[in-house]
Length: 91
Ligand SMILES: [Zn+2]
Image (cartoon, rainbow, N blue to C red; front, side, top):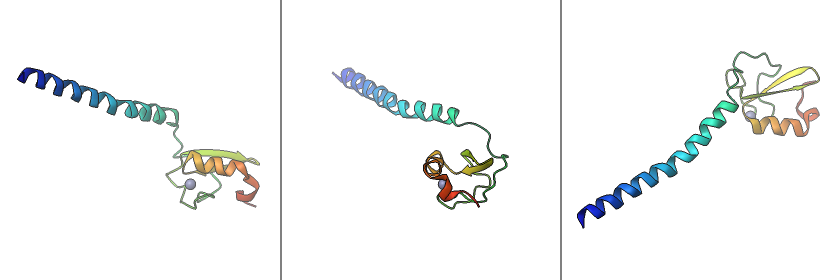
């Protein structure tokens, strides 16, 4: 009877660790897809036009608009820029 309890405990532990692994794997593949080295890229904006965060060293994505490269802290900020670039682009 005691061994059955241990077996059940071991089984639930391995199930738990399996459940934990799934998002980690997803996260890792997401990191790979955005693993471009953008740290030394030249952008025209000192700060993210969407959230006004400094872009230096924290650029996660870029967009080119009217031959200017803009840096963004995240893909969602870039998406916001792409919706209406004329509103955020530098004059
Ligand atoms: Zn941002």
